[in-house]
Length: 325
Image (cartoon, rainbow, N blue to C red):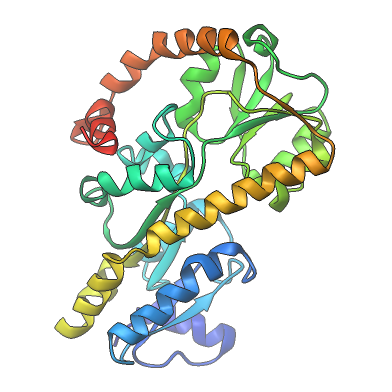
């Protein structure tokens, strides 16, 4: 069978029997999320075409197989789904090499960040017990605040900042703020209620999480890196395919679909900033002098971060791959 037994049972229970040759794809967002049109649907269509119709993809959106974003990888390991969409940053300790894309200064937008991921992809894939189908990134985060604008490095002192990725923590601490990790589903309420003073988030999330309603100011220069996104196939499901079917999956995995997904995120990020400006949020550029102060503080902690282990390499080794050096 070309799907996991448990995945078939769950799928059958939810919406009818899964057919042979039909691969289940789990993701926790709704079916109208931009990644459906930006990656999931094109990936399924390409896989069907490359396999001559032997393989099709059946979507299980909205957390139908598991609603917890950090548990999507477990769906593959436990045989619940054939494929799953994951955010490795939710389980950074499992994927320390992939987490390096979260370092500040690697890339400027989702297209460039996806290119950085692609340059290191062969190395990154080694830390997954799964067949990687797609891997891309979003844009580095902005800082959204409500009660106080951040115009200078000194303005960050004592603030509680929600970080977009745990990789950002040492850099936010170096700037004098207190970083906290928080699920993206909670950030709107946390900022509105004053639980946090600011939220770091990719601009693509401004509209999705109505941050244009919760915040009043956006500072664009806070150091933070991108987050990565992965669509992976259970290794057991991949191994069960015929040689021709595996070759079809390999061609999809090697295609430019991931680059297309990165481009989608870049466009959504731009629209997010346009929405914020239209909603009346003040867009703050701290200027060259303050940016230089910030960079000095980032540089003071970067050597220790780059020397830290990332699997069988160091973070610096992975950074070099992402930079193409």
